[in-house]
Image 1 (cartoon, rainbow, N blue to C red):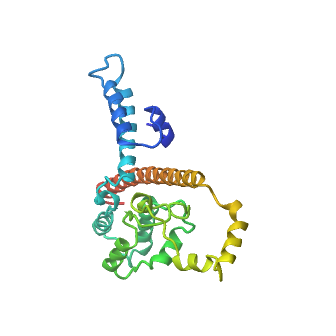
Image 2 (image 1 turned 90 degrees about the vertical axis):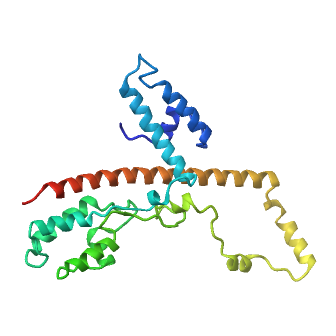
Image 3 (image 1 turned 45 degrees about the vertical axis):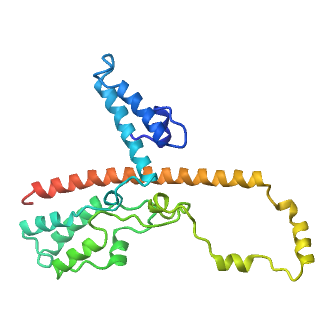
Length: 261
């Protein structure tokens, strides 16, 4: 199946925003009608394509509506044990075989570590930031590997969904209130020494005051935008998870099957 955008997947089942449980139920009914047991004319391949798209929509809905298990939202795939076994089986000492050891460590890192598209640093900067890999202490280095992302860690942390610098999903998935600096709001709020001053200020700014209808419309638009951001981040996370699982399988297959260089 080729990569689908969220809009394309929605259009495939004729689903309008927002994505709801009712719209998913309708989509499932359409999907079942395509099943080879019920549709003798259609092919299994056609049904499989629609089924895969439907399952992706269900995942997105789950992320947005808090129906995903915490174990799925925060997942560690420990590739470190596989790498350690491979190194030990082939007698690659971190110090005596430093070049060979680093060659395989770097290859593992580049192939497995999922770099965020918003990150401006690469492998070398990661090592400087997270701590040098100790070649004299394999066990200690392994712990650093586990602590500092070399094990493909998707750790969902809170962040502002409107800030493109971050790509985590927990803000879109859990947080629904954007924090306000109350002290700043208090300091910036106009102060008045008398009722007359307040009345003059109100008259001068009356033209800038939104009507109740405009305020409600603005709130509605902001909520709509926030939902769209949540959906976008959820879909992005889902794609990242699929890529991560694929890389993990490729990595494990390599280091479990190869016994010598």
